[in-house]
Amino acid sequence: MALDKRFFETAQKRLASRRAANKQTEDSRRMEIHGRIPKYCELEIRLADTMTDIVAAVAAKAPDSDVRVREAVSSNLEIQREMERLLVENGYPANYLAPIFTCEKCRDTGTVDGKWCECFNRLLNVAAAEDLNSHSPLRLSSFEAFRLDLYPTAVDPEFGETPRSIMMKNYDECRRFANDFNGKGYGLFMMGNTGLGKTHLSLAVANELIRKGFCVIYGSVPELLRRLDKEQFKNAEGDTMELVTGCELLILDDLGAENNTDRYTALLYEMINARQSRSLPMIINTNLEMAQIKARYQDRLWSRLFSMRVLIFRGDDNRLKING
Image 1 (tube, rainbow, N blue to C red):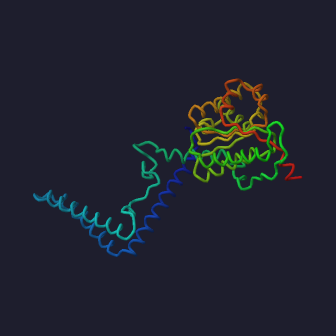
Image 2 (cartoon, rainbow, N blue to C red):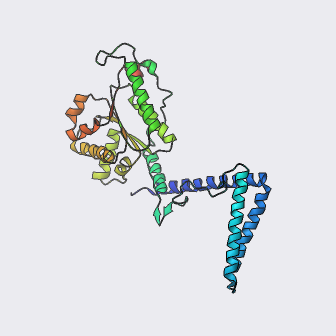
Image 3 (tube, helix red, strand yellow):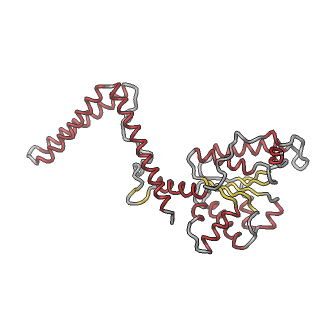
């Protein structure tokens, strides 16, 4: 992926911060043990002496070097076992003072066998996603701020239940989606008029997942398609398509507000199809009704939209109630 140098610098700084935080935890644990178990300090000194003995025996190249090395190694292992027993006897795990790594694969170096580790690529993608999201309202909504009391309690004859009960189900579905999210699986397709909470609940999901460490990208469909169009057909810098088809959750807001051109439709299909073929979830919002969607988009696109879990939003424009 051709990513901006800034993202590499951000990823490397975060990797360094991760190492520093783990080292601080290690040092804090060691100080704790030294304070509570003085004998452990004595064993550490003896352990260091055995390492010196091993090095000296190897360097001496004397006739009895092999015997001395074996004896020193045996003593070293016995001291390590005694140290572990001492920790366990005092209520600590045997590996309490082992080195701490956030990523065991690369041991927080960022590389494995000369290649970037998955953890470093994730840090890169998160940095790029944050840049892409920098002008979005990602942090403006939460589940706690969602107001079900704004939805009518009169029965909607089309659905046979009240808008409030419908929206309670949608709210519960979004919370379940956020709680169970693991980066794979189904997506949500939200349909309904303006001001019914589609964007709010989408962003509430996003905030929960960002807090858990998932890579989330949010964008209005018109803005994303303009950016993709410039990159793919007008030689603008960037690789937004790889970002939006590779992040753990993509939120597409305001589907149907984009220019209805063959090029935009092709880009939209490429985005959605690429994610669904890899079982990567999306949340897509639209103000269009089902008939409008089928009239606007080709079968191969709208069939993918309706293969997602569809949530119908009902009620009156809440923004008028709040601002009125």
